[in-house]
Image (tube, rainbow, N blue to C red):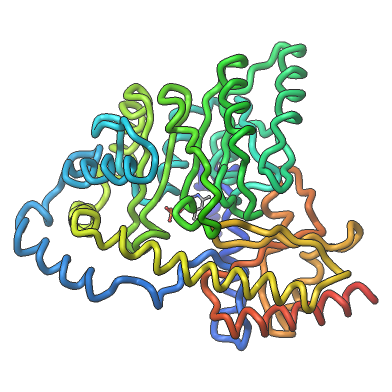
Length: 403
Ligand code: PMP
């Protein structure tokens, strides 16, 4: 019998598919309210504006929009990104500091390829973004995890680890962080800790990957977090995405980094896909130029703020005493902690049969810990669904705890 699997390369064993995707598949078509995804609310996609822009782009740019384009990204889009970053509090970028990617997921994938040799040490938050773990794992990275609290990554703990590595003669290469409205926890790194992290990068000679998809959705206007990239244009590799501020289906992300990093990324991207869709880049460039993105963000922010409030209120109402949870000041997620001895993966089938889905938190921990945690998304479900889902979840937690 032909064994097709025997033809598949060994490196595939290092790749892991996202557990979230598998869970989402389980819930499809069923009467399950999913708090498992991380999808934007499609109600707010600027469909009319994008219909107009798409038509204008095809007429105005014609052949150019449909043609191959340079690997780094269409100049018009990169110029607009420089301006957009400046408006967002990251001045001083140049088009040659920027490469456009197919979502920031590709940015992470390409960064892992150009930075990480097998056994290089990558330091991540515990918990961190699942797909980043998978990407770094696939190139043979060794992980070290640093815990978080309500002020983000515990930099004191990071410093201890760095000292230990130095004593052992080891040198971590990269700290990967989602400093603002982190996925999955929803917490943000305080400005003091950001300063401290940058100092440690100097002292211990490592690079920082600042993954920043959620900064535009900060719900408390008095809180302003400095971007790491705004403070350090050498050690900080910044990536962000149009996925949450415009539409994820366009698959547009970007990296702002030192030109040497951009050059290496360009080579890797050329191998991967030649370039990101020319048409989509021109659409996004126009959306930025016409102010569609800038006017879209506050509407979405308002909507997500109301949903966050609904989720926190419902948790307060139904889960008080049986769980603890983060109080995100931005982003898309709340992270819930049950009693230490409980296992949210084991509880998931019960939740699905009660009609509610979440992501078991252990998926976000490099060492399989966090078994008592779960990630809840509030951007996609409606406020009514959020209330109903938390009610259902509290029943599940209470029944599971009593078992
Ligand atoms: N990084 C983080 C922290 C994310 O949460 C996501 C999307 N959920 C991504 C990267 C990838 O997003 P995209 O590829 O859509 O830009």
